[in-house]
Image (cartoon, rainbow, N blue to C red):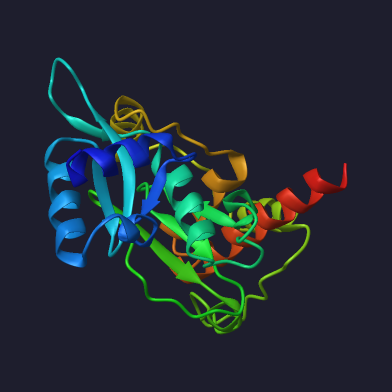
Length: 228
């Protein structure tokens, strides 16, 4: 059996949606594995997320378009788990605090670790926030904004109320949501996330402040679910 066929079979038998080059390295020499990976990408079995990181994919029978087997958020979580990028991620990628911006990009909370590894799918990117950058969030104006770690939803609602800011979807928001749904990537937003976007657009929050609040909100919500 050819190496590319053995690798294809190995990939199909693996659980999950993300495949690391290191998991396939034992099947052949470095150059052979590289050639086989290029073939698998050309055939639509894999899409590249980053250096040594791939996602299982499938080719649409009618359009011949290659699409990953899972949405970008799922792939980011799983890649974080396999690469041990987040606190506790060795056991499960679902432990990784993760936020999604309105443009489809992903923000990954890496705790105390500082990372620069590039992960992307098309135009969507993964960026990172850690304990150090979170502590150095710059205020959006002259006032000093203290970022809370608890009761974040209440803080965001109060901030929006004080500044008389509300969320109204723009044409670009609606277009991005439509494109995301057509791509098979489910949209996961809520009223708190929408208010954060509105506050940032109104200049009441910097991008860094919005990202930190969003990560803290999602982390707090996950902790509450676990305690139930």
